[in-house]
Image: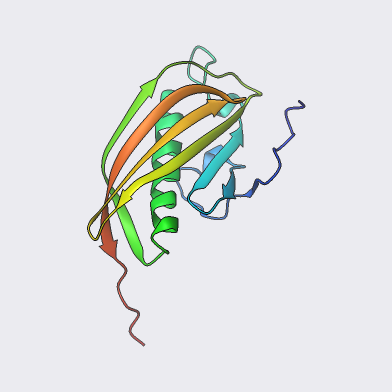
Length: 142
């Protein structure tokens, strides 16, 4: 697979953030139950040893799980992270396709639980879970 190949179903991620701007281009794929975030790993994603940085994995997992909760809840609420845990079980290298595949475990009026598997070329390298606080969006006043 060439380093520029993007897997089928992924499109440029439209939800931009100052944190993730340096990691662009990011891609996402919407399913009925999740927003999957992916990117082709490059040198700016690495640590001093040339491996993919754990902070990148944690931030993208938090991002994908939060977006997935919002998606499942119909976009009527904002979410803030209460807790985030990441277990690193492998590593990834420049050129691989990284995908954060999330699953919403449970939604409620004030809390949402999610988990994800982070894969490099379809091999699990980390797992994550998070709890989010549901914050109702404020009505726009004209």
